[in-house]
Image 1 (spheres, rainbow, N blue to C red):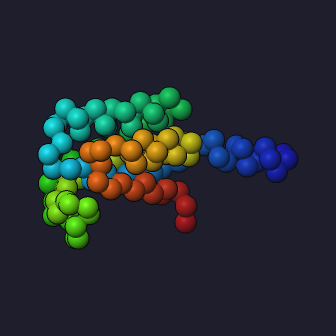
Image 2: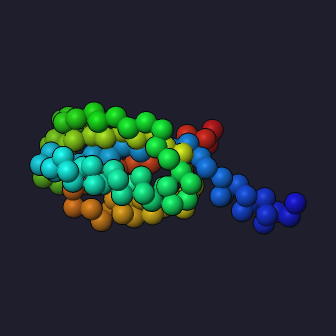
Length: 109
């Protein structure tokens, strides 16, 4: 197998990720669900899926982020391709309801 084929096959494999999204506390429940649905749809387009979703609820932030001292936390475990994660990061970055987010690849050691 050529090096480029090996790299391509590795990049396109599903990987385990954990994603934490901190939303503004004034985000309506419907909007929270719409954001989660958008993430789910993005990873489903490339054969990924959520394995776990936990709503941690409203929590105090360790420090102010912008004008926010509290946020609504959502923790997601998922199987996704790296290209899906790039799109999710881009979408969350421009969302007005998202204070902060972080996706971590759990397969890397």
